[in-house]
Length: 129
Image 1 (cartoon, rainbow, N blue to C red):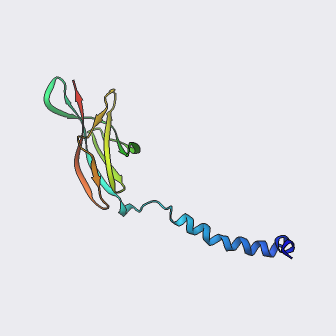
Image 2 (image 1 turned 30 degrees about the vertical axis):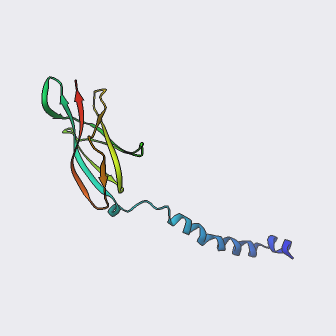
Image 3 (image 1 turned 90 degrees about the horizontal axis):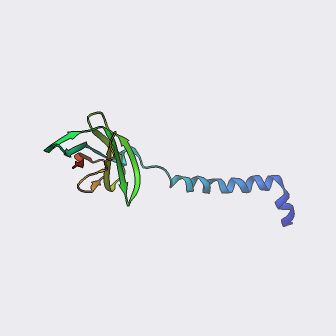
């Protein structure tokens, strides 16, 4: 009797439908966070020092947000060095690379992002010898 059930096409169709809700339920938990669950970080990428000690200069380049040492997102700055990141809640370390230089820059402190919060004025500074 069991062998006949397994070969019966009607039984196989019903058995596959029974598994279908489980597939959708497992996919539902993997959805990306909604835009309202994210926070925003804005700031500027700057060069500091060099032939003009004590002055800073905004520079175009890229900003990278890292969490637990892993790169989360990289964005380009405007030509005036301004950037905007939309990040999930958590603690991030921001690094930057000005265009046409080999410099690596870092924000002085980690940034903590909360859902719906806007964190403004985070400078990523590149010390120039």
